[in-house]
Image (tube, rainbow, N blue to C red; front, side, top):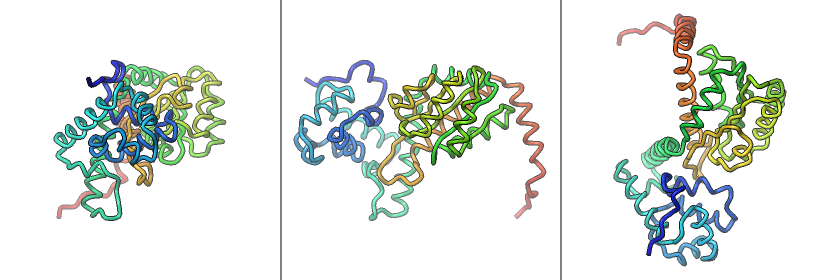
Length: 301
């Protein structure tokens, strides 16, 4: 008899669930997870012994892995992997090979197809896991904030800059910090009328965690944008906005995570702008007018 995942897991696809538990897995279990994520259609065709051998681990590790993902039996995991890869291939018109990581034999067209699929599915999966109630709380907090501080490292910092620019254009005081010391100093000056937003795919970046802690200690509402809600960053935040990015070993610039984080930022920004619609429209009109004359006129070909 095939045992299904528990009810708490049913609303999330198997690949999304696997990504969400990655930080909590032991090295032997993580090896299984990474192989499944790299080629789910191939993993679905393997016996439990074959999968363990391919990963260089034991069948016991495979059992622990599928139980942590929410399955009571290996057959249910294989069935869901087969269903999901088939469903996505049909829905998006892509071959199973698109699931594989980019390799040296890929043509430029292969690279385009794989990146397009990866980023499209990162957005779709994020829409599935995003808790709208948490998003509503974040919208309310940012809308009423006296000052919003935003911090992230690397690609997360670039996403933070985009968010700051958006909020600034509708008249909300916000700062995106690239220097961790400046971020800590600013967070220390927040109060109950402020918001601290931390962006980290892993949720384990020390500078980002410390920034959020400083904001919380000052009394501000703290928001984490992360792929791993059960990470140190997620556990320390008042509000967690979860992404479900599809990352692979070939990921310069954190491609999937950046796209998923940008989707969260866009949802948060539009929610905030809608919350104060009249003032947001007025601010956008003023800022558009301020830069309107900075573009060269169009010329007919």
